[in-house]
Length: 114
Length: 114
Image 1 (cartoon, each protein chain N blue to C red):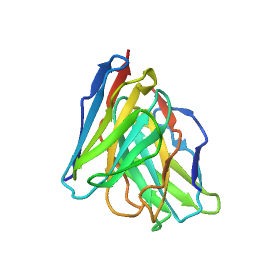
Image 2: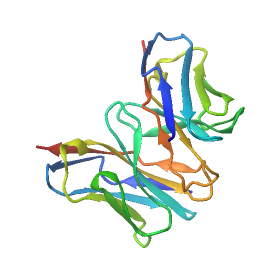
Image 3: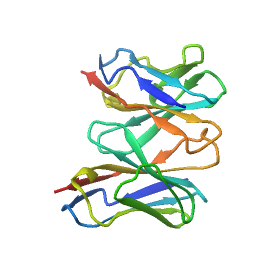
């Protein structure tokens, strides 16, 4: 069966520090991969998605970036965190070219910026 | 263009009474529709999906939803609420032909009173 792992589960970082969040998927090949951010009490904001190694699409311009160095690995990064980067970050995967397949989510990373 | 409206930001029910969470959508395409549940500090879990087969869709944990094209609605129901149903619920619409046109609703918070 397919599984998705995100780490760390929680992270506290000072303003201006770098960030690296990792997501890996097991049990499927060539998944579509997604990074979302969820601010407190709000819905999901799509940040990045990827359909293959090295292929990244950005939905929202900001100081975050994403990379996909391997088929089932998706990394969210920042060189210098802002206070506004606080939130709950979720990674998800899906398969296929159509939107009739659901996305499957990891348990998220709670990021607090001090 | 696609959009999702969840008509209630918060719903409160007594344990053992029916649950109704409302969702209306707008889509220029043939949509796929999903309901997800999110418990505190967790990722989203798929409850059910509609992808053009039967209009009444049964999901996990006793939930079901009915696709009504004439009303552009996809309301989520459960005959009898359980304490463990207290969570955030998201209605999602996607373009059936494209993996990257997925719109999440703002969410409805469900409280269950003992």
